[in-house]
Amino acid sequence: MNFSILVPNIFYTNINDAMALFVDCLEFTIAHNELNSANPFCVLAKNGIRINLFQNAALAKEHNPEFRIVTDNIEEVYAKVSASHPHLLHPNLNKVTLRPWGAKEFALTDMQLGIIVQQW
Image 1 (cartoon, rainbow, N blue to C red):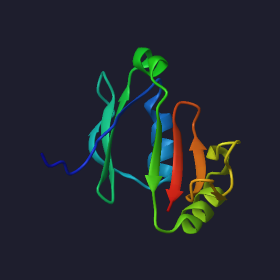
Image 2 (image 1 turned 120 degrees about the vertical axis):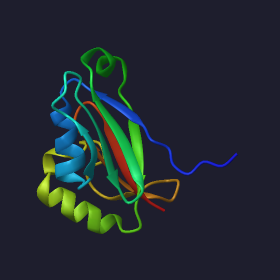
Image 3 (image 1 turned 60 degrees about the vertical axis):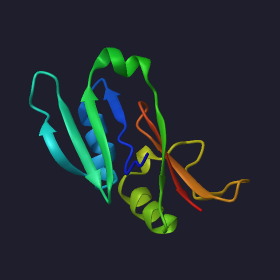
Image 4 (image 1 turned 90 degrees about the horizontal axis):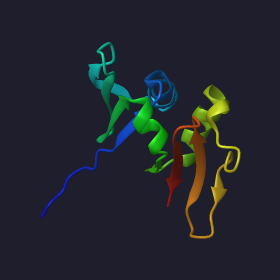
């Protein structure tokens, strides 16, 4: 068996919250757009990463996922994010921190989703 990519499905009460985090803050692009449909949906992409976003209030209440995004330059990512979107930094990990397992990390949240940015 060979797999090339894992594509998560993320459910939001309001898909615009996801767009603020992924498109505005993390600079993903919209690869497929059904945002103006009766059931808003889109596929976001960046550097081989893909994410499916859905607006579905019932499923959003059931799922509160947390993801890790690995980078090779966490200081650059942190500088850009903290300057442009400091309100998205998670209060429990709002600075680049060397963790006991040897990775540098900081975290983001939009209160629906947690994202840990990590560099080994």
